[in-house]
Each structure stands twice: as structure tokens, then as C-alpha cells.
Length: 150
Image (cartoon, rainbow, N blue to C red; front, side, top):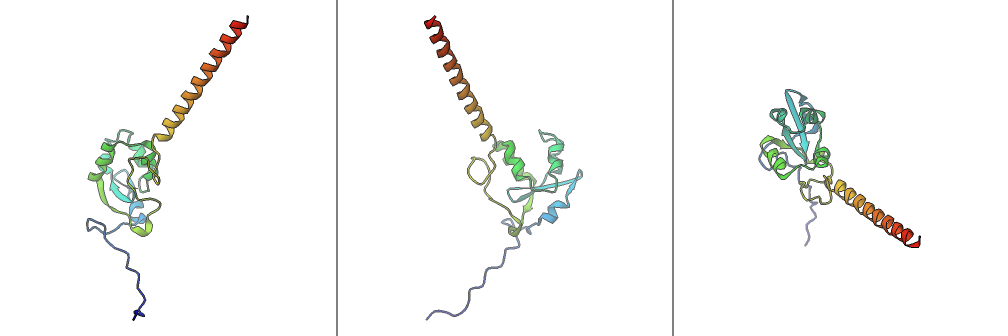
């Protein structure tokens, strides 16, 4: 005989995989000064205050996204594996599941659900090169045909 009891939804977890309490965007937003810079990248919260002076793109880049979700900007730049690995030492927590937006996949391969990084730029460059080569070839053929006819 089947049970008449309704299955209750499991409560949302309150801690991340490392036992830290989940953070809200409000928590992150309050850390937006030069002395205290937090941001979210792929649903993880990072305190990058000590990295301001060392960031290759300058501290302004980090300050522009202080207290915000910087995932799209991080992926648009096309950071290296080394840069992604450096993030680990700045991680202070994870965003609460109810506040996450989009995909939670970690970037790297240019797969679906993440920023394209440098791939669109590369594709456009290849397309421009192919069109340029075709134009050059066609103009050479036309010039040769004109010279032969004269």
C-alpha cells in the first residue's frame, strides 16, 4: 500500500561545501571600498583586497566590479588557467543557491553557459583573414585576365 504522506521539499542548505555559511549578494555588496573589495565569480565570493596592487589589469578593473557579480567580465577577458587557480586563495565563501543566476560551471573550455572569452575575437579575425585572402585572390585573377585580354 502506498503512503499517503506528501514528500516535503528538502530545506535549502545553509552552508557551502567547506562548511561556511552561504553569503547573500547583500553581503557582497557591502564590501565595495578600496580597503575591502569582494566580488562574485561563478557563484563563489572572493576577497580581492590584497590583490588590488598586483592585478595585471590594474586596480581600477577590480574596483569597477567591487561588491558585484563579476563573472561575465572575468570570462570576457579570457583569463588563463593560472589566473583561475589564483582565485582559490582569495575565496571567502559561496553565494546562496537562491541568489545564483545562470550557469555555475567553471570557465575554461568555452563551453555553453559561460562567457566566450577570446573565442569570438579569434573567430572574427579568422573570418576577416579568409575574406581578405579571397578578395586578394579574386583581384589577382581579374588583373591577370585583364592583362591577357590586352
